[in-house]
Image 1 (cartoon, one colour):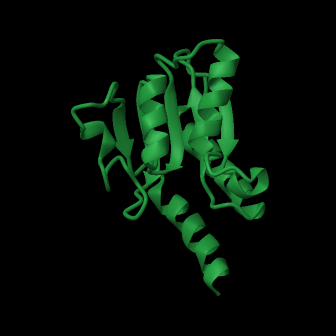
Image 2: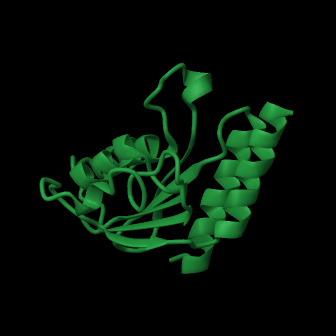
Length: 151
């Protein structure tokens, strides 16, 4: 089993790979109930020409395939940016146990910002939430990426 602090470091490494490929730098991993990483992904929207190819969605699909089930009960998701509404909905439907994220997203986030999806009475499942983990390096990746796009 990996040390918990290694999980966000792995997600940050994936975010760096996404940035190197010209994608918004977001990385995600899913950890099994046994503490093993069972899925790794990064944003692939541009490379895949797919608006749904967010790191979280790709990691959820991969973990479901690995486990051979439609739900990820007992699994944890580590991601470098607060999930959007699409990803938060998928997290709920997949029954992710815990969501750990690094940087908040005031514009597109849907966990602490925007619709605060997990606080809605119609939500099927609410994971335990832990934000702000390794926030500074995640924000720095995002600042660097967007500075190159605007510069």
